[in-house]
Amino acid sequence: MTLAAARILSVPQSTRPPRRGDRFVAWAFLLPASAYVVVFFGYPLVANVAMSAQDYTVRSFYTGDAPFVGFGNYTAVFGNPLFPASAVNTILFTAGSLFFQFGIGLALAVFFNGRFLGSTLLRSLLLLPWLLPLVVSGAVWRWMFDQDHGVLNAALRTVGIDAVPWLTSTSWALPAVILTNIWIGIPFNLVILHGGLRAIPASLHEAAELDGARPWQRFRHVTWPLLRPVTGIVLMLGLIYTIKVFDVIMVVTGGGPANATQTLTTWSYQLSFQDFAFGQGAAAGNILILLASVFGLLYLRSARASLAAS
Amino acid sequence: MTARLKTVAGILIVAILLFPLYWMINASLQPSGALLKPDPDWFPAGGTLDGYRKALSTQGPNLLSSIVVALGTVAVSLALALPAAYALARLKVRGGPVFVFVLLIVQMIPGIVMANALYTVFGNLGLIDNYFGLVLADTTATLPFAILVLRAFMISIPRELTEASRMDGAGHWRTFFSIILPVGRNAVVTAGLFSFLFAWADFLFAVTLTTGQSFEPITVGIYRFVGNQSTEWNSIMATAVLAAVPAAVLLVVAQRRIVAGLTGGAVKD
Image 1 (cartoon, one colour):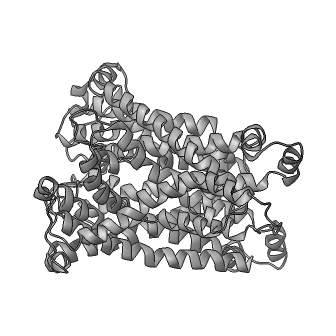
Image 2 (cartoon, chains in turn cyan, brown):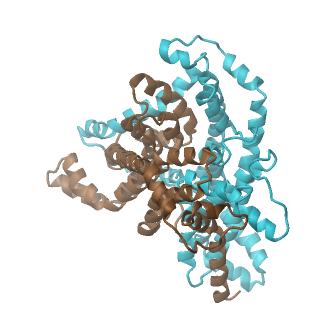
Image 3 (cartoon, one colour):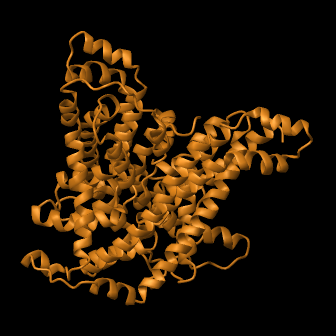
């Protein structure tokens, strides 16, 4: 979605002097959307910071009273053994998802970049997993992971491997949700990387081929360097998206078993909406925002840099 | 590799990657007992629509709720995004570029943060379990994207077109409704389709801002259905198939626009 960023930053602004009265009209056109942005983005951000410094519980809803506790919520969050656990899970989930989504997406993009009968149709069919509601994908994978009746264990049985307790074992649950998220993320990587490949002039490949470069050498020394700006954008967007994944984990494992798949996002949800410790949930959310904005700024920088380069 | 071999390999790749979808449809067409055998049936031979009957009777109202929420989100998103995009693309607004930058930034805010804060406000305003409340919340996911897509398109409309209309004495409103909207129909449809799909698929706001006491969007319906340790996988999968229909329809009717929307035109295809 935010790839639109690259486009926006590059659009030249016209320098025609404004007519009189235009400014007023322009504001009238812009007012509804900007009011919405202030109320629905600005307010929650501020409210979340305020809540994170308050002991905000269910009672606060009725009494309207939430005592100020300073950094109490942050101390509680950092002191909770679930914090390091869900931070580590977030890192493993993000790194594992990105590595395989990108690797498989790139391989498929290279493959579908070749011209052959049906390549366009097949490539567009692969978009389907990306368009499905995440809850649907999650439900399907949960069914496939089912220990006794799931198709994955049935397939393993046919080759003589014992049933894997995908969702009930604390060591298998995280790989299972990562696998699900990889499947969901492949189409996004495929489409963007394919677009990047198409932008590389075929003449460069032909020249390298004439010089005797083998396919792998052509990829390594022609395709890969020219694709770099696009790979930067894909990975950064994937990262921003993956650290806040919620739906997939909630449907497939619900953060369990025994918090084995709890990430900062699902833990923040649990603090607020299951433990009703809204102050602590807000604190965990703010830590997540901090993470997201660090990576977000990196993304904007790389988007700008790649435009400057092209 | 020859071209024919590549086609075969391509079909194989697609078959493997889309297998989970086949497996969803396969399960949705079998009797629930058949799904609990140790060895699964690979084809829905002797299929039944029982799963779909059960799905429609228990989840039908939720499907309708989701349609209402999604259509509402499309209406609100377009109503806010169209004038804003016009102002940003065609009228000189002081602070316009800053606003565009803000739209890029807010897309990165994790939804759970918004849900946390909105829950407390909505609680005070009586917007929990409220269609309009959920529509307003879902619009956070659609509005920045809709404005950016529409603005990018409106910038590409030849300036002569709007200038001519202004010369002929049409005001900004008239120009907006008689020139921009008809010419930009495709972009409006793209923004609308994506808004529908975002709102249809939303789970985070649905699960935090509704309690299930008055209505329940389909994503929450599936979540609770799955979470009940239910063994009726045929009706769960039938519900999943029904919830997947809008995505499939979108892919068929608007495949090109999806890629355009996905990349926002940044990567030339």
